[in-house]
Figure 1 (cartoon, rainbow, N blue to C red):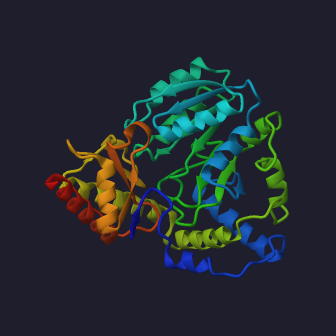
Figure 2 (cartoon, rainbow, N blue to C red):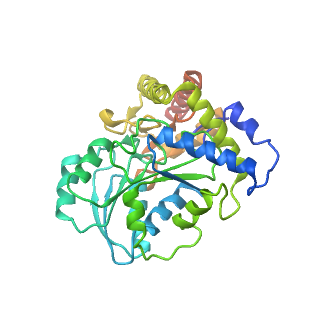
Figure 3 (cartoon, rainbow, N blue to C red):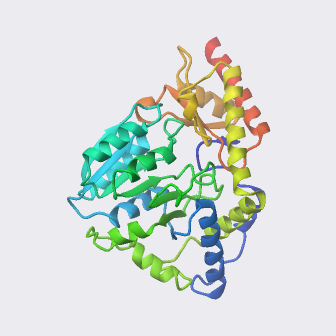
Length: 361
């Protein structure tokens, strides 16, 4: 099977081997050493000295943690979205009683920093600003540096970034860009199993946390930080995920983070070039095409779901579906983690043959 979805992704041999390690005491010195090593390495990848918190959860769990630790019911939240996952982020805040101002952008296009700056100025009472960096539903990498600048120049709000499918796969400068909370998850560019979410927390976010009144228990950042500072976790962690992430970070650091970013950019460009050769057009604005997932529009008369079915059943290729209003209209090819040109070649051959079968039917 050629798994080419935007996560979970195939695991490199070194990371798979880590999953065979025996269990250890999650409150003992061996785990404390692993956690300290993982936190320090994550800070280097996130480009920050801000606190790093890890939860045994999906990435969505960490998004929820970010919300419940920074707002009280009735607080103003400004949400910028250009896809399904941006919408979901706003929905989480709404669920917890935030007064949401939503600013929506066209799916497949980049969010415009000028429009963001204007909206921030018009909503200076917003306590929190929500932004999705890499929108996996559309294959767009939004210009986060410029977006963050637009926010920071016009507001002291806590800037929370869903970077679940971008951190580790493209440049992200947490401190230099003024990002208060940055969230990712293990099954994306880290090429680990699902089940571990990581987020950085700035001093500004901690200050807001002190007055946030939304109830929380498992996702209480203060509780987690206090216990992590002692080398443990307040609840039983996903031990194997820690082992896997420890090995993933070792691979990343051996390669060098700038080279990791460049590798993702190269394989993304290669994927788009191969797709074009078989007649598939990029759905996203090419200037902002994601380095971790490519969304491809379907030719006239081709149903994306039927193409996915044939590719899987006859050629062993598993690719992502279009989500929400894009279902049946696009496919999504993941190329995050450790991906080779050969794997992309195999995927494109399978897609080409699947397209030919559909046209003949």
